[in-house]
Length: 148
Image 1 (tube, helix red, strand yellow):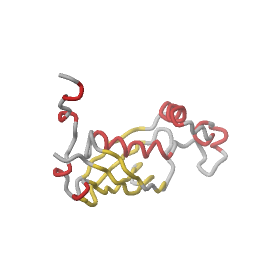
Image 2: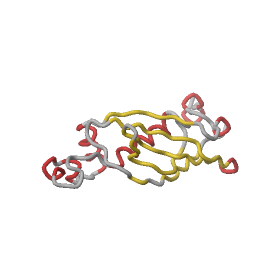
Image 3: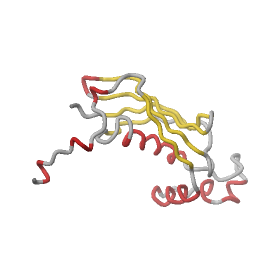
Image 4: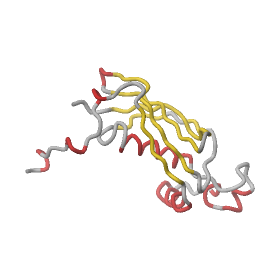
C-alpha cells in the first residue's frame, strides 16, 4: 500500500458529529524541575523567574514558577489526545493567567465543549487549568475537527 492510499482513520479521535455541548475531558500533570528546564530549552524562554531560585525568591512569587505556557501546553495535550483527540487542529486560544504554578504542583487541565459551529466543523471549548481548587489559567479555544 502506498503512503498516499493509507487509511489513517484508526488514528483519529472523535469526529465533529460525535461532539456534544458540555462534553469534557482532563489530564493531570505534576510539574517537575525537569519539566521547567526542558520547557525553557525548547521554548527559549530563560526568564530567571523560572530558572534561578535566588532571583525568583526576590519576586512577588517568592520562589521559581513554571512557565505559563507550560500549563497551556497541558490544554493542548487534552485536545490532541483526549477530546476531541488525534486529528483535530488547534485554531486559536485566548488565555488568562490567574495564578502561578510552582515545582511540585499538580495541574489539572480541562476542556469543555461550549459551542458547535457545524457549517465549518469548528468547536469552541472553555479551557482551564487548576491547582487544587485554584484556577491558574482559563480561556476559550477554537478547534477544527474532522468530519466522518
